[in-house]
Amino acid sequence: LVLFGTASILLALAPGPDNIFVLTQSAVKGRRVGIVVTLGLCTGLIVHTSAVAFGVAAIFQASALAFNLLKFAGAAYLLYLAYGAFRAGTSTTLATEASHEIRLSQFYLRGIIMNVTNPKVSIFFLAFLPQFTNPAHGALPLQLIALGGIFIIATLVVFGTISLLAAIIGQWFRRSERAQKILNKTAAAIFAGLALKLATAGR
Image 1 (cartoon, rainbow, N blue to C red):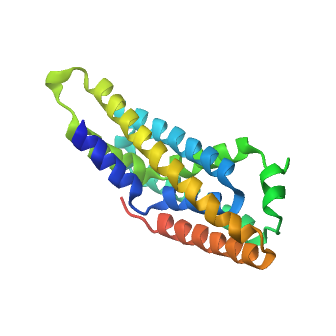
Image 2: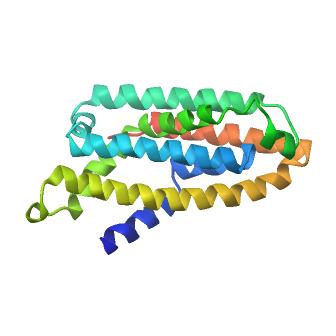
């Protein structure tokens, strides 16, 4: 468990689509949005953990069609987010934090979709989690769910920290309209890059 927990923290820290997504959303929209996106991403990890525990993830490993359908759906969604960020206007920090136009539920759903539509996460879990199981210690599905829970906790702590730090830095940018425009365009470029990376990913 110590080895698995350490590995989970290091994997959460390693640059990847999810923590980059948290970083950009926190920097652009503020800490509340960053935390909610983090919760959405972790909810997506529950889906992947369940998929591994009950064998669904094996479908994405075995079926090129299922893998490609899901990854292209994810890439299309990222392009949609890139377009929204590119077209975004400017607002002051206080207005951004207090705006009623920001629906936290939308960002929670955004985090779920971002995570669930990446089939590589399921395949990674399928390869990673079973290495830390032992048939002598009980039912494998329960062990996999427990390990997935530990991974989710590690991710929640790491991503939550990233969102808080990114929000502090982003707050400085959001005080300047010019800097805010640059931040939005940068976020759009990052989303587009993530979409390209996901679309070209192999199993």
